Length: 174
Ligand code: ZN
Image 1 (tube, helix red, strand yellow):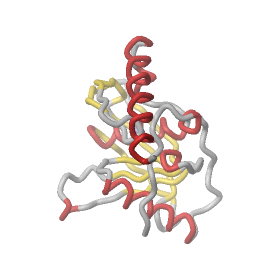
Image 2 (image 1 turned 120 degrees about the horizontal axis):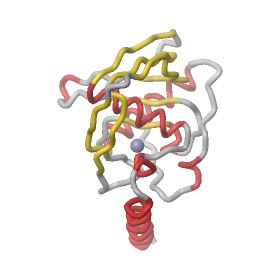
Image 3 (image 1 turned 30 degrees about the horizontal axis):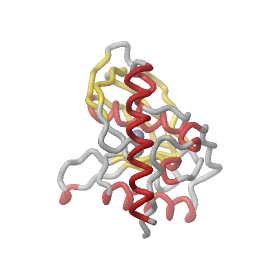
Image 4 (image 1 turned 180 degrees about the vertical axis):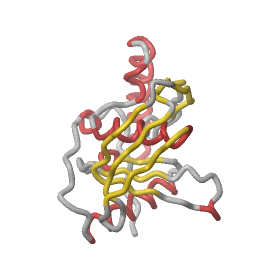
């Protein structure tokens, strides 16, 4: 496995729509492993392929809190079959928006169909944090970030801060 670098907003690739995978083969599994390692190291609870610069409809999620009880889920070509009318609010962050958090309201429950790590069709009925996390990650595949749900003022402020943060990171690298 090898760690990949995570793309930080603002970056035009984060706004692109990802393409479906034809199948889950050994190359895709290698990418899944790399994404999982990258996510654990960050650390985060979800990562979409676009966040490491690959425009494929692929996400990894692990909401288990303890390192000893890791429970990763790999979702290729996820599609929602149900979203509840009930909503819930979580404070969301994003590995592509380091240091920024906001309360976001989303359907409290969702059902999602996808191809799993073994290349089989699977469906998950998610509630709570997992439901929010899946919706956040599927948004990435459609070029949507959680800041898009905020007021223009708040969103612009966050993007401005991130631009500054990226400039400073580049200085250090140089
Ligand atoms: Zn994110």
